[in-house]
Length: 284
Image (cartoon, rainbow, N blue to C red; front, top):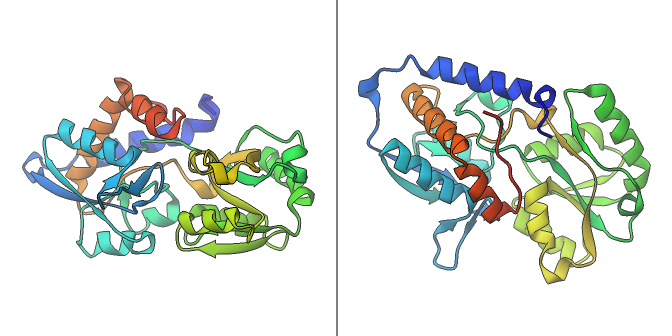
């Protein structure tokens, strides 16, 4: 997962983003911003008992804001309203486990990645996929290797009902590689597809590895496990970054600098291990 070849494109993107944002005027620096998160994707971001947002991205947002010396307010917004809300000026930044993809870059800008987390399947421990020896991490940009792994998976999941969050790169992956092989059921939130898995209304889920691992750690999911290869690159883009309006170039530069510092001093590793039980730190 951490080899240079797999993440060269991510590093290149980070450099280009820094170069682009560096031309912004210093006097454009904001003193206060509003950050939107979904609040329904534990443990990345979720709504606590007090109604406030919590999780890895919330702690990271607070850390980045302290580094940038600006006041930040975190608000909760439905997933499908995040990009429209940003472009309409309802808030200034998105931190909601949103992958940096070419399609999204047509509409908004992104900071450099602050996390890399591949996606995979959660299935019953008795399923054919769980019993297989298929494993490993595959970058979809290495088409031959990734397609070979996918082709080996297809007969093991054929006919299964798989839950996935709608309007996500996870949904795009299933539609591109498993359409007609599995029955794809879309949900507004991952919380909804988790409930259907525990109730037996779907056979499997497809989502980010860390989010699925958190779900399966609960007692009601003891009959399920992560299984099969994990995927990144391709439709999953360049990793997870902060979404920012194209016009706010100074803010992009500020986030890039703060994220770079949080990577360098180990803060992202510390926070991700705390919340996600895995180190999702991207390369410098």
